[in-house]
Image (tube, rainbow, N blue to C red):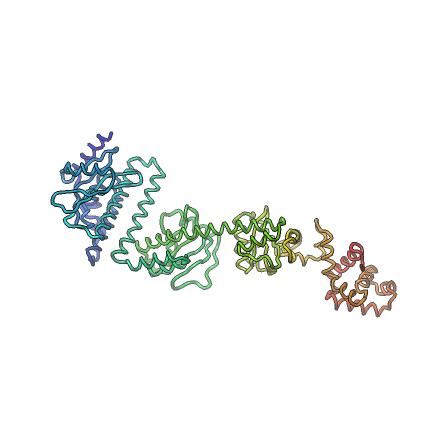
Length: 592
């Protein structure tokens, strides 16, 4: 098999000659590009020819032609001549004739002795010679034997190495085509190698014309703590276009350059998802209106968007390469930040779950300090439920973003049908609900908030309070919005699970000031109020039962209004006060 392929190889070479593959007859690859500006230096010309050669190499699927192109154009890299070329055919290095001549036997013998390594080659009349292995991911593809009339400089060696890498990558693709793409994973790796080699052209150009700018770019990106702002700053410096980073939800994380919108537009979730899917379907950056957009997605997961604002459509291939390189540089950092965030979220959830179930204070305080949260303050338990959203990780993240947006410092977890926050301050009556309505695009949500908890041991009880507030709200006429447990009034003691603590709290809330007044002044304000309700608000009967004058009763009722701050003419206050006096007398032992 190897022998027949070798014979076929020599036969194909005997019928091939000329320059790069052509779209028109015999044209040099750069000729198809039309007139171009004169090169400023030989190095610029070398880079341009290598660019053209790379296109030709990657445009061919014939390994014989690829090696011929490399041999015919090795002089583009410096004062080189191609002495010989070899292709690995079934484990045998088959020489590729050039101009009808086969390599010298000594050269072929030396190449086989190298056994896949690079090495010096002696050729009469040439002070410098080198056999360069064309090694791809799957092994040795062949050899390129190059000689020079003088010792190459470091820059010429670098250009030659670039030519060898391009040739190797092109041969890898050709061999993969020959195997009819049977190894899908291998082909994917080869495409990545080709992409990586093409991106290395930025470095070559930087060395020969843009060295200072690219070095500044790499220095900014590599600077510890630079992150997204360093990338947008360097990308703006390289391209002259405004550069920005958004998270996957469309919220701005960094912007460098002029014309930043203020305020930045609030993203539309539906349009954002449509945009992400449209860009993900394309290879490389995609233009959407005035932006050139690429996704930051290590391992296929979209973590954000990197974009250039190009209203005048000025972006060229160098701009595209810079954008792709910046996205590749930013991807590991965003992935690392995402991993850290996931660990932090998991630690937060485990801590909240333990607090809601009941845990020892020493352990809870130590763990809260480890995640940077202060548990020594009073806390509120907040329960969030949205009718059109399941309580999954996505909704939990939405609740966390909304809470942060309204200034809430909290720990978060999720249960079967709701998300739970332990917050260090009483939430605003409407802010969290309004923020979540904007995030979810619907107002069909309910939030329950507990009374303040001054002890970690009380958090499980306050969790029940928050659930009670949520349940009362869901079954009320206005089922969507925020309800606070300490504002439920009578409903606090009517629900399942209510016990003596709720009764005592309810009585203290409505009668506490009167009870304290009676205790300090040896008065009977609570008893007077209780008798007043017992007799249905009848002044004469109430005064008679208390053995006081009617005017004295009126005076006491006015004092009750002044001390408690409650209005007996208000239906809600009157109901709660009457229930509180009944509970005080019957269930809590009356004046004692």
